Image (cartoon, rainbow, N blue to C red; front, top):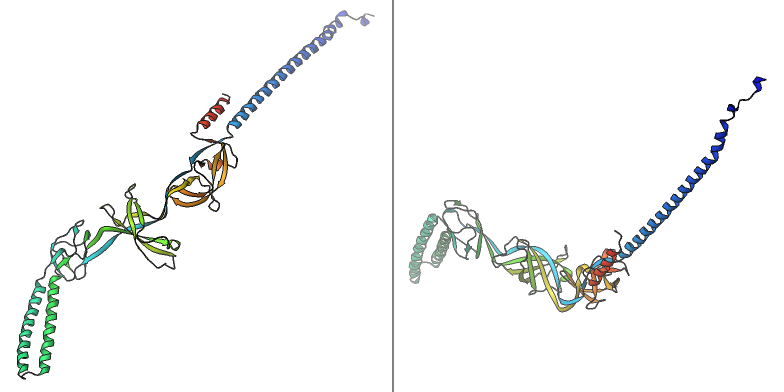
Length: 392
C-alpha cells in the first residue's frame, strides 16, 4: 500500500505554470495593439509627407510651365540688298623688270620698298662694248652717206648708172639700221622701270653679271587694289559697274574700305556658271596685294524697311516663320521675307511694328506655350512668386 501513496509535492509544480498562461496572452495582446497604433501613425505621417511632396511638385511644375525667352521688337531701319563673296587682293599693275642686254651691274639705284616712277633708271650696266659698236656703225654710215651724195652728183652727169646708185642707197639704209641697233644696245645698259610702283623684289647687287632677259626687279602698282569675284550668273542683271563695294580684310579687323565695281565680264563661264566682277579700292597705304578680302556689293537700298533680327527665324527655309509673344504665350507666325542685310532681315508681310519676336529659347516653344520674357518686369514678378512657392 505504501507504493500507491501520492505525495503532494508531485502535483504542486504544475499549478503555478497553469496559472501564468493567461497573463502572457494578455501581455502579447497589449504589445500587438501598440505596434498597430505605431504602424497606423507611421502610415498617416508618410501619407502626409507624400501629400506635401506632391503639393510641392505641383507648385514647382506650375512655376516651370513658363519658358524663359529673349525677344526683340519689330522695327524700321534701312537695309541694303547685297552680294557677298571672298577674294584675294591683287595689285592693279605688276611688272617684272628684266635686263635687255648682258653686262656687269655697275650701279644698283633702287631698294625693296622704294617707290619708283616709270622710266626711272634702276641699274646701270657696263656699256663700253656696245658704245664701241655704235661708234663703228656710225662711221660706216658717214662713209656711205658721202659715197651716196658723190654718186648722186655723178649720176646727173650720167657717169654712174642708176643700178649702182640704187645699190649705194640700200647700203646706206642698212648701215643706218645697224647704227640704230647699236645705239639701242647702249641704251639697254640703263635698266629702267616699266611702270610706276613700289619695288617688291630685288635679285641683283652691284658687281653681278646680268644675263640677257634675266629678271632683276619686281614692281607692283599699289595705287589701286583690285579683287576679282566669281559671281553666280543669276546676279548678272543686278551687278553693274559703279556699284558701291565694302571690303573687310582679316589683317585689319574692324576697318572697312570702300570701293566700286570697276569692271564686269560680259561672258558667263559655262563650266562654273559664274562671271567675273572686278572691284577696285584705293589702297590708302594700308591694303596690300595678297591680303584676303571679304567683299559686299550693295545693289539696292531701302531706307525704311520693316526688319527683325536674323536669329528670330525658325529653321525652315521653305516656310519662314517666327514665334511672336502675345498675352505671354508663343504664337507661330508665317512671314514673307525680303532682303537679308547682315544680322537683319526684311519682313514684307506677317508682322507689324512693335510685335515682339523670340530670338532665344525658340527650341523649347510650341504653339501656345507659356513664356517668360527675360528682362520684362512681369517676368520678374512671376519668377519671384515661383521661388516663394518652393519648399526649403
